[in-house]
Length: 420
Image (cartoon, rainbow, N blue to C red; front, side, top):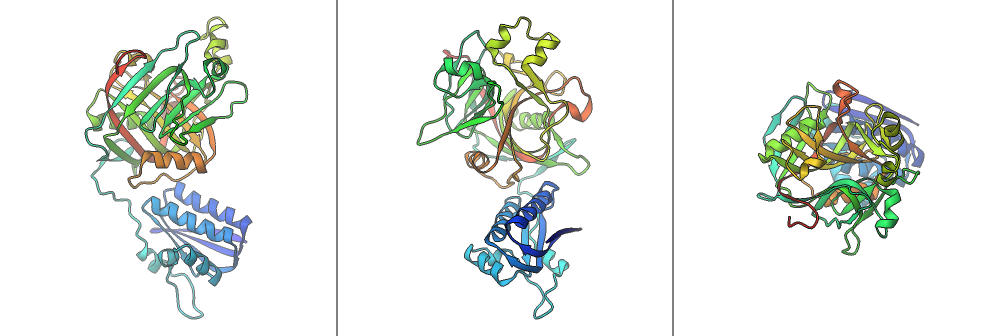
């Protein structure tokens, strides 16, 4: 079987030749996924030369059509054999994604007519603002909403049990388990949002783990340090790469979110398509580092902390959570570091990295999209995103292709035991 993609000004045609069975369905899925990653939002799958389609092949077509629709594009199927039309009819999609072709023996795909039908658009209903690298649309989400934050400082042997309700999000050094004593040897990079908490254990395996809300019980990790916010998001920021740029840097996204709220500090939860992440993760828990003398000596630093040598995890999807601020507000200041290596823009962000899934560009509930990632994608890592002073230019910070960012002004900051 062959899968050949031809690009046109209005989109792309993917011609399939042979048997579309389970093996080749995976190849077709990869080809369609690559179109989405490349920014193509109008595609036609030409099945004129297909002799057989299995249920696996039909499932790829229906799932890919939904992925294109979620990005305000459209995937059409042209000249489908009867078995495909039957499968799409059962799924209720035949009238939606089957494109008209020639009548009688001439069933060739006429690309001009098909692309005229495609409802492809990059326009959003709200005004779009172009910045240096990105194009941003900001719209109200929960007008007037804000978050209250708590800061957890790292003290020897101290861990706090912190429930992450559905309206809570945060980052820090923590672990999932039954009690602070059990969690201590595994404390690593932690991220939580949308009722799910994930972390990267430091027990040697470095296999990320997570816990989702179940039967009304929110995950409650043990946190050695970090910041956790709870409340509502006042704005939703949709963003994509500007025409003259290749990606959107984390620092620029943070600045846009601060401008959207007109606040000195904001909480941000974003679902992004990554163009490369720059960050680090612990190799040892805090207790082990403290017992090994000076933790910031060059050799000691390499023993307990792993840095990305260059931007990593491109062509993946990332859940990015954190806070950004224009100035060091106590007690939040201890959790903030410069973004892009300059004063006046501070932040603390972690990323949960997943296998690639297109980011929807319509308004969706945060909990829904977070649950979808954890249920259907592979969790690959959890990173502390940072500005790498060892590198200059694009390689010094994380970059994204497109995404959604839920933003809230920080109304208050407190430490454990103090009223928020």
